[in-house]
Image (cartoon, rainbow, N blue to C red; front, side, top):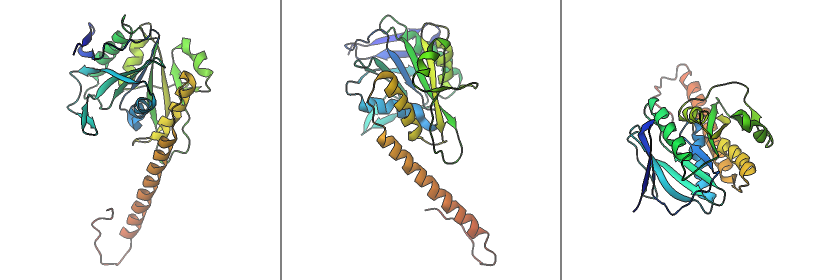
Length: 263
């Protein structure tokens, strides 16, 4: 199989391998990047796009010396943990990273490689978007979507009813990709939504609804919302069991020793 490898002079420990050279990426593509951050918003959004865009094709993967020693597989089939896919119909490049990187110094190297490829003659992408969760405690009832963007993109994003975040910080690989984009021709923006410290599919559903409007997609988010409801129900059940356990522990004079409650 003929492959093409992209190595950036400034990101020497990472590279992009394109395995399917028959796929031609149209100029002006949007690069959607889903990293494994808190709430797993990025991978959930990316996986849903991959599952529902009918023409999406896997074109290659990103490799790095900094990737942790973790493999992933679906239905018994091994997959690279950081994959690249493309939808020609919607001119969307989808990057999905399902494992966290081991050390923060990996991010700068990685972001340079990603942006270098996105701006190469074979791609000529227009913009890059990342997702990040806003950590919340307890049950979340609403999942509004916020944005932070380069100034040239703000008017465009406002048209879709997204509220800007006035002030804050972005951390992790998402931050280094955005910072790198600020130094080159890629337009960059981030979408935020509240998340729990566990997978938060409802937050991903809210972001996908925004992407539907922005890129004229028809992604169905019903199943994600149902998954979110199931997670909430399980959380509530666990909280109730924990409360019952604490109450029983406080009962005086029972003569019983409690060694565990959950099954």
